[in-house]
Structure formats: C-alpha cells, structure tokens
Picture 1: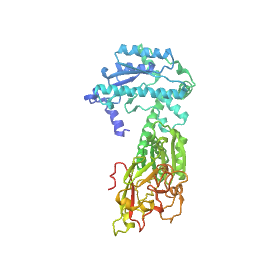
Picture 2: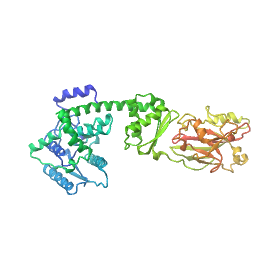
Picture 3: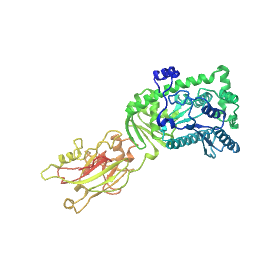
Picture 4: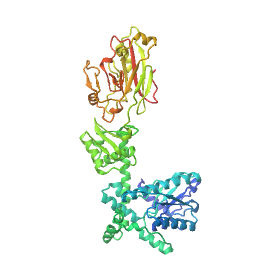
Length: 526
C-alpha cells in the first residue's frame, strides 16, 4: 500500500525519464490473457503498437516484442463458437508474430455462477503455470514477470454492483484491483465502449460471446438492466465508481495490515490445521479489526474457504459470550471456551498413535511430539519424594511431575510424570537387574475414562470432568496422550494434565518410571 509521497510524488514525476530496466528483468515475460473479445483484442493491439503501464516503475512504455506471449483458454462451453474464438486468437497472434499458448478446459453439470468462478480459476491457474515456465526458460525472476488482463472500468463497476447485491464487505466493494502481485490490469481506466471505438478506428474485429446477453447470470443482469439505469443519473458512472473502488481498496489494504498485526499478537498457538487465539484480546479488539482477524485466521488454515458475514458474526458472538461453537465452510470447527478461540480444520482432528512404550524407550505422538520413558533408581539414603520433584522440575507436583494446566496449552510445560514402579506391579529386583523391561500402553482418551487425580486420596473422577476443571479445550482433548497399564486398563497419567494418585511416588518408593513428553527436535532426557 503506497504512502502519500509514493502515491502523489510519483504521479508528478511521470514526466521525467524513467530508470531503464536492467539485467534479467529485461527478459521477464509479459503474458497477455486474450479471449478474443473486444477488450482483450484491444489489449493485444495496444501491447504491440502502443504504450502500456505494466506497474514496473516505467510508467506507460512500449513493451519489448520478445517479452510478449499470449495465453488463450478454450473452455469448450459454446461448442463450435469456442473453437472459432481459439482460431481467431491464433490468426491474431500469427499476424503480430506473438507466441501463443492454448489451454483446454472442460466443465460438466456446473451451474452459472459456480461455472463463472471455476472458469476464472482455470484461467489464472493456467497463466501462473505459463509464467513459471517462461520465467524459468528466460532466467528472469518471476517477480519481474507480468500477467496482463483486459479488465476495464466497466468490468470494475459491474463487479462493484454484483458484490453490493450479494452483501459483500469492503474487500468485495473495492472490486477488481489494479494490480495483485504480478497480475496487472493496464486498461482498468478505460471503458468497454472506449475500447470498442479504438478497435473500430483500427479496423480490427473481435469475437462476441452470445451468452453475454443472458440476464440469468448476475453479471449480465447488472450490465444490461442495472447499469443503464445508473448511467441515467451519472453519465460518468464507471469513472465515479472506479474512483470509489480505489479509495476502498487502499483503506481495505490498510485495515488488513492492522488486522494482520493484531492477529499476530492475539495468536497463542499454531499447528498444522490449528490456530488458537486469545479470546480476551479478540473480544477487546475494534469490531472492524476483529472481523478481519477472523477472516485472516480462517484463510491461514484454508485459503480456499470463503466466509460469509453470518459466519464471521457467529464466531464473534461466541467470543463475546465467552463460549460456543459452530462449523464454518470447509468443515473448520470454531470453538470458544476457557478464554481461547480454537479454529481447527477437519483433517487436523487426527488421532493419537496407539501402542506400547517400553521402559526405556520412546514413542512418536501426534502433532510433532515425542513420549520418552526411563527407569530411575532412588539413590540409597535419598528421600524419594524430593528426588521425584527434582526429576519433574521445580514446578512439578509433589510426587507426580510437572503437569501442565494452562488453558489451551496442555503440552507446553515440558510435562514430566514420575510413577512408582512397584505400584505398577513390577519387582524392583528384576528391574534393577535389567531382566525385565516394563511397558505401558498409550492411546487417546475414550468415553467413560476415569482417573483418581493426584491429591484426591483415591477418589475417582471422569477424565472429561478433569479436562474441564483443568481448562483443556474440547478441541485439544482428543490429542492428549493417555498412558495406561494395558489396552483399556487403568490410567496412570493423562499426559501434561493429571497423574493418577494411585501411582504417585511416596516415602516407600525405591524405583521410578519417569515419563516425559517433549516436542520433536528438543533434546531428550538424559
């Protein structure tokens, strides 16, 4: 987004000679997207015979002919007419000596608006592929390449009204941008009528798409029904709307920068398919920024998801009330609880690996974590309880270990648990002699699981209730490793959350099984 100096000083300086393009950028490809219609035909003629501003710092300038390439996508939607469009573009490129790439696409049983969006995605995907190939062949940086489309002020105005009818926010109302990365629209200040007049002066024909008269499509309805009425009140409708789109686009870009910065400070945790946000920070944000934060967070999880306003408002309503959940497009689960908003994709709800862990040994878990186990003898004359505390860390429980309890972060406190080996039924003489290797079963929480939490003198509670009292979000619970005596057996430790009181270290403890959960890449226990 430009500053005032960049926006206006650069305009005043356009009369001065631009700095020459040097190095590999002089070879960077410029791809013209040409359908054969009036607008794209005018784009091709202007690129070959006139000057265009392709947003490379040169202002309006001639494009070196060797840089020009044409892309035509035949969607095969109109039978012979589509093939005739392709033939027209081929003849045009042959006449001007331009290399042509033709891509073919097919669409079956797809309704109008979805069809239009799908065709657009196909065209841009083809353009990006073509640019990558050309940039690689020329040795030019891809950032210096350009994809030129023939969007006009008329297209921009139609899109503005279409998005207004559909109830779009500022991003949609800013309509078609002048530039997005390497995609540039040099004809955005010209109307369709002006380009038609230009072609007529040049004696150049073009192709007409008869489907453009079908007002069952929203764009055609806006073009043929709404726009003529609006022009009755403003003869310069396209320029007036386009100026407003520029302002909305600049303000939208600024607000997006604010939201991105706020999102970074609000993010408590990220993982594959998971973002956890600080609910209090989000709730205290300005509503305009908070809406964008939600959209940015969802986009980070799945760039293809398109949220409607009702989805964003639903998420913020849950944040405002401090609790609630809903399913967003793309199957993303949004859940507000314990002061945290968790957004998780459907594919990220992975199950923990289930299996045995031997002592000593290690076991890979979900979400990039590792569980390690070892046997430790209590030194002669040492008090077992303080010794266990030392193994667990200064922040550990009295005899159980450093069990995490911070909301939303059950595995971020270097959780360690020290179990009394004898309480597991092992003969210490066998363990000390090395003749027996203890093992424990590790899996995910199951419905009906119970545990005797440390410090409750053997009284049992449902594991789900313990999760609730320890403020472990529902979205996190399926990934909490549960260590058992055997498959379906007694729980010894809900990793990072709660140790079972029956397996704690006491004054009589002589041998300890130490369990430690750590992120992959962190040094293991000694």
